[in-house]
Image (cartoon, rainbow, N blue to C red; front, side, top):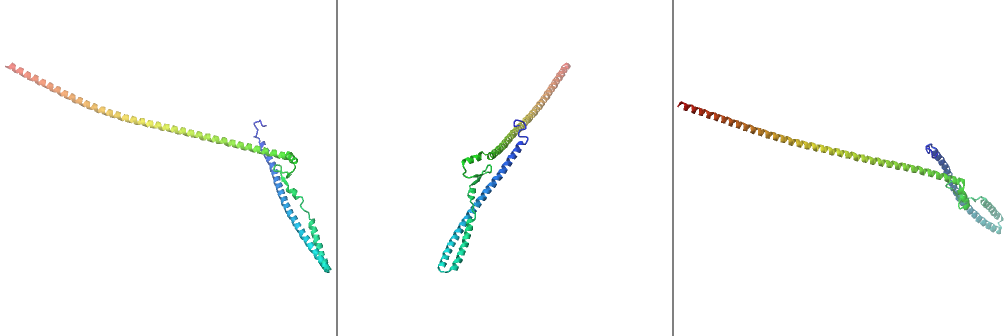
Length: 272
């Protein structure tokens, strides 16, 4: 059974533990009753001692009274008072009877022995205080004492096993909790790292967009500048062409006038 897969799963151990606990509960009740009995006997013994002391005191008082009355009766007899002496002697007889009754009352002879008893805290048996070592060994080796001692040891062993299992389970749970917390911290760090990388990428993208915007602005400025330069250049070219065209037209007109003047001079020479 101990090697099978059903070990400690069928409830046999719990049932056995309950049975052992019931045995210990019963013997603990018996031990408490034994202590109560010893306490009561001790109290009764103390009361008996006080009663005996009171009886002894009464006996002493009665003896003293009897002796006084006897002396009184003798004095009365010597004085010739016979009747009075007889009356005193009757009283003496009554006191003697009372003293005898007190002396006949039983004492608590067993009290000293009871006060020397004790209760075994393992099996609940009554033991004599200061008993012979042999009798003490016989008690310790007896089946009742040895059986209850073994029961108590087994209960304590099982309780310790349960405590160890609980402590081991709590230690495992604590370890798992710490591991979960550590993993959560690692995941948190990873998330923070990812967010940081994303922010860095966003900053890089934003920086790239800024660079492109600035580059685009410079390109537009350069294009505008080149466009203005081209416009100025084309304007200069147009002015230059216009100037060249005007100069050419002037030259043509000048040459035309020269030809006209030459033709007129030629005609004049022919006339003459």
